[in-house]
Length: 296
Image (cartoon, rainbow, N blue to C red; front, side, top):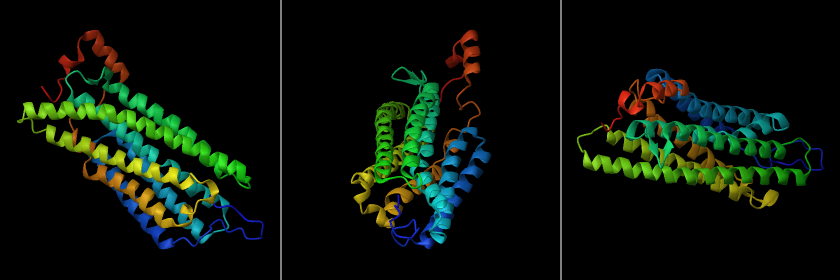
């Protein structure tokens, strides 16, 4: 976060940012978001609003950044893009969790991994993601408070770093479950090579690992960026931000464009049932008997 000096200058930027680069990423994020919207409608997948929201927040980030470059004395525009770019990737992270829950539902016989039901993956990990989200938003907002003293800014950055650290911890825990599912799907694929639907499932699972790796790269960058507090020179070089934050998050959105969950899990029965439907199925019998998995 740029700090105003004691002179009369109110320029929020400590360097000369490139308006062209900002506009370029604005256009790129808009395009991938528009494609996600079209894919959500085409494949009729309501839960895809989460990845669309991720794209919208990135678009808003670069709208405000572009305006801030044109109006460098505006605190509000600068603070808006600064906060949005810090928290927008959490939507992509949440989407990975939601997709994984649907994969467990579709590609396991018992619809669970290590006794955790498919329906609970999205619920539990998204709730954990929200915890991380709240911490990061609070820290980012505190760091961007107008006329905040240096110690308050540092405190806000430390809170934000704690939030991304917690986010990474949840990702690592999640990866253990994802690896377990990977081994199960791979084993099933080897035992039943004629089940061609398993190949797209493997591709989607690998895509989720790639997206999580991109998010992890971005988290490491953000931790390194603010590890030295306000003395860090990394924020003075926007190339780092574009290469290690914006580009990875753009690639994550594009990855889900290329390997869209709605295309691979397109069956009308492939989506997770509501909790009310689960209760009804429990009363009338086994859900597995009523709705066989892709393995059967």
